[in-house]
Image (cartoon, rainbow, N blue to C red):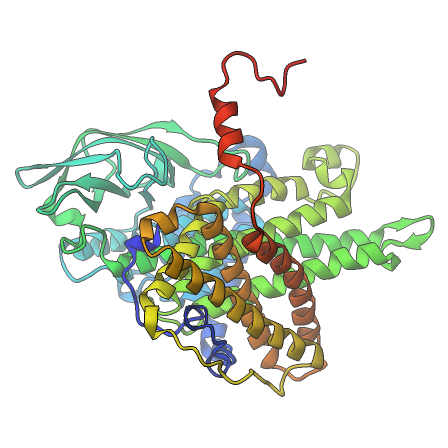
Length: 562
């Protein structure tokens, strides 16, 4: 979901620092802590999920057969796992958003495709959207169906692609409701869903609108035309859906007729849900890679010297440790103690931060394992090797960078969000520099990182403010996609560094968390240096000319001709 589908929210987030050029450390330094009772409630459900998945799901069999165990969805439903965040009066477990994240990650750590059933239902299905729905017939309909026990999903990707503004699925007004015609692709839980929601174009007084249409899958004209299989997440029920004159009653249609979009509250729940169905699985992969790396390094040696004694191996391990620390910091900052309208910027950024962190870790772990990582589990079992499923995690992690929209396009959306905020501030942008941030709770190394973060935030703001003043037309501004994408990536890195330092500041200097924060900030420093370098570089190759000429060339490709 793009930022345009979410209303502006006057909530204090890291976006304020980027908009003003002032690192608001007095506010950002208070890292959110999960209260004890909430943590214990989450721990209880975590244990239940761990036992259930261990008893009912063989992850290797799921990957080999590309199918989930019979009755899995029913078992998850009976235990309330498909209604993790729903209120108990509707048959749910009433978990907080961060506990939902934790539970989904626990399930995905055992089997990612099996865990993704929870992730989709609680992330983008009816159970995810219900808390954000306004009072009315749609909320009543979904609440009733959830209480009855259903599996659901939401189809947003048209056959024409994810990022078209106009949906190719159409909703034509008819007596009592609308007629849906068209297709949806890549719909999680689609083949097993009892109910689906879909986005479609519908006519409005001021032009076409985008609405959400909810229907039972036994409605005449609805069909699953194909079960879609991916390189990773083997066994995940995902489908192509067909709508041939499907009637949806008016009472099951949701749209904000003022804006021509979905209600802002639904967009906010969708942002939170994307963290559940992409970020939580990414966290699961990252943590498992840490476990596997430690086990591998402990049992291996080279020429009689333990693998962990080699300097490069130590760097690989600590980089992954710091990566997981940063991912946890982002998830907690985005989800703990925050309402649906809070930390909009952070929640939007979290998906890419989590899945990219996971990808770097799994790629690093593959290098650590060498051939043993690239080898499949059945092959390892045949020769009596430790059956670490790293090859499977590698495939799964790559898919997460695509799920919920492609990573570079989300960078683009995030960059637009920041530029829009800077543009709205306009002449009201402050010119005086805020007091240099200080924090006695940070180690000397992390104090230096905090000072660098402050400088980077001001550098980012100067560039963004100059850009929106130079190019005041927003359409022209957003057409500079490479610049916008880079700004999105830089903004996300700056936010992560802030969350990491805030978390480290909550503990005494000299501890492990301070060391992990230092590690992360050092790596982030190098990534930011490269990103800022690209952002401010003058001139360069004519990418438009080169690509257009190559695409327009007739006959054999001259670059690949032998």
